[in-house]
Amino acid sequence: MDDERSAFQEEFIRLAVVEGIGPDYAESYYSMLFEIATGLASRAEKLLIVGIAGSQGSGKSTLAKLLATVLERVYEKNSLVMSVDDFYLTREQREEMGRDVHPMLSTRGVPGTHDTKLMRSVIDDLKAGENTEVPHFDKAEDDRGGYTPVVSRDLSLLIIEGWCWGAMPAASDELDHPVNDLEKEEDPDGRWRHYVNEQLAHGGYQEIFDEAHTCLFLSVPDLEAVVRWRWQQEQRLAETRSDGSRIMTESQVRRFIMHYERITRRMLERMPERANITLYLDDQHRIGPPPRK
Image (cartoon, rainbow, N blue to C red; front, side, top):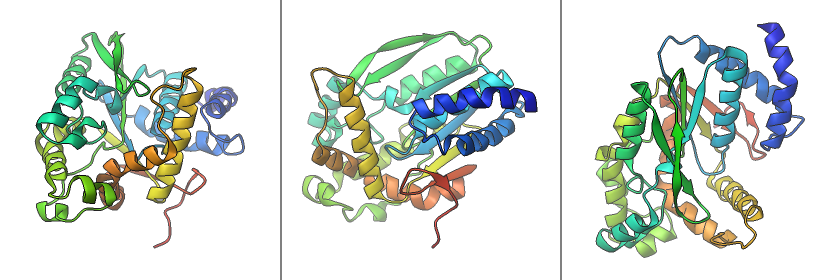
């Protein structure tokens, strides 16, 4: 196993750098992922399901992709990485909710804006060893962009990453007061936040979260880091589109993140106790020890 680890390490570091991991940090990042992968590879489940939670820009997709790569190359575990984001309702469906329930629901992100029935169906297909189709959400177009066929034969690992993975609903009295200007100005009576909380509790999310055998949580240093990292993501997205369509400005990103703030703050308080593994990010996006209280 040591030979296999050494042989793959150099290739992994190159992949990590491509994914945005600093070259001076990639080696320690690999050591961390190898340790996590070793523990996961010893599990006996026919289809091991791993959930990865963390706020916008925290690096969930990178962690999921590189963890799957280690498990595939070193432990020969055939894997599939899915994102909760890809199960957003279509723009048309969200616009309809915006008209019928609350205008803020036309903005993707919070519980209630995902197609949990479709997510449940895909997970059930994979657990049963049946072929299925996984949707793809085009964030630049803010709409579903089609489906990818998945052959489930010999699949042994399913990694699902999502910003609200594992989040628990709040008590009703926690929703009484707005947490930011967006809630204060656009949800003064609390109707939106109560709807979101109800969906998190009874909209199929908890049953899906319970499917994970292991949960990893990326804990961010503060909300300002979330805004900064999400803005960096938006800039990278802009580089891939020649027309710059539907790319948010920095102020729009800040407003967008306000939709997530309430649940994100609660997850930062509660998830370290609930997740199997919590990885703490510093202001430079490096994983290190828990912050001092």
